[in-house]
Length: 226
Image (tube, rainbow, N blue to C red):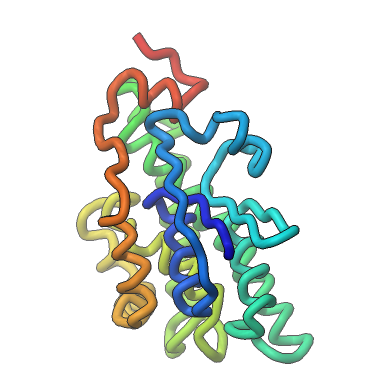
């Protein structure tokens, strides 16, 4: 059985959605990053980058959520386009999420919510807010007149769903309204039974909620915690 190491952040949740969509049997194993479980020696042997998610599938160990999406889709023979041109488009948009949407949204969240107060304004914060908004705008424009990122529902939509759920936290309470086509996609995917099953992971484990000094040390190791 597949072992899926997760918490409830965007990257693990898009993998949870893919697992539910493919119907592959899996065991969810929580990794509480606010308790530092990602730095345990046993987990570092699975993901040396000390991040979630990660997946162990027989002899295959896969980390990075987008690599996991590809692994699962190829294993299941589903949610991938057919043909060289379509595959090129799929890889381009999947990497757009991997290298653009995800990192810039994540850094935007950090500077808006978790950075020291003095660093929540200024060049760095403005840069990440600008780039996060720009990447979501590119995706929203691409989705105009389209039901999904590609011709049919697939792993790129799953990757987008993981992050789009968090847009109010990323860019502000009304941010989702800035991107009506992204919102339409989000609503479409969220209505799928697999998405609802993925969301039910929230009730499987009580992750640490407090962002105390201990949690900050584990999550933001480059920050000095006073």
